Length: 405
Image 1 (cartoon, rainbow, N blue to C red):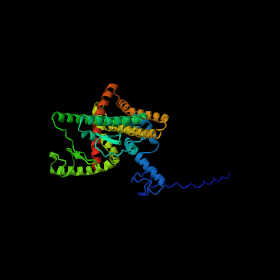
Image 2 (image 1 turned 60 degrees about the vertical axis):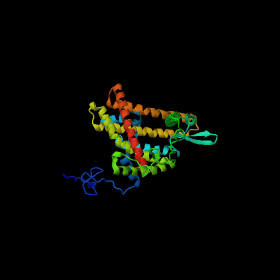
Image 3 (image 1 turned 90 degrees about the vertical axis):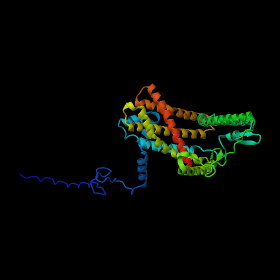
Image 4 (image 1 turned 45 degrees about the horizontal axis):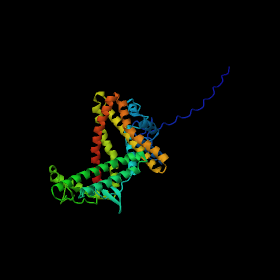
């Protein structure tokens, strides 16, 4: 019985050589070497992939940004709750989200508006006179010598302010922002007029002519004690600082004085310097706001880092909302000649401004889960405390910008 020969087996293909780390020759199990940590990707590759990796590393600008921005704008507290539940990888991290949006928002703010030059003292407006357009401000009221002159200057300045406000009334959002500044200027003019009238009436009652204050510098330089600052003739003096401290203070005043002259020629210098430092200032204030949250919700037994996550998401929303408002304002300006289009854009802008405080209240309610009455009470306390903190921070930031611009 003959045996049939078994068919010869085909030679097996050699196993593929495993990828090895180019640094330590260990077998790679992923995109990073587990032994030495070197990544498989270096810089010797297509430039486009390097740009993509950079944007992903710095801002996480991939599909996560689309999954993040929608809930950030329209679902108060959702991102913080997701983060606490452990669902983190699908969204942009809170720190990167805040950095990305704050930089874009305040860069857009720098580009969105310009200050007009005003080489004069105090709030000023242009008014129509028989001689043409004329600048009126609190400096003219301050130097007036009769009650009648004060009243005339005050009425002319306020009338011009109200005329300026009427010119923006067709676009509600623009009127909202401009109106705040005009209201402040009007109150300042009225207060200066009342003060000057009291001085004139007191002088008349005493039988002497009212004193005319020295004219303030019109080149933008600073003044103290009613006289221009000078390092020798009229320096800043703070008793408890001592000689060395006052010398340093006046050196800073000298820098600020020179910068004030530059700002007088171009007010946008201060605006740009101030807005460029706002993201950094907010980043410094964020931990303090988280402390406020920790104090207000001390019995909720949450970790400090949880409050910091809430602070990052709330500030990210505010920066995103500010960016949207600026874009809407730009669109309203571009379509000003088309009222049927600019007015709806203006109303959407107003709705966005109203949505900001409402969003923060709803976010606080959803994240911390307390009743509406207690949430509203804590919301008001937190708002007042943080508003004070922001005011102090903005003032310090303004002074630093004035000295170091």
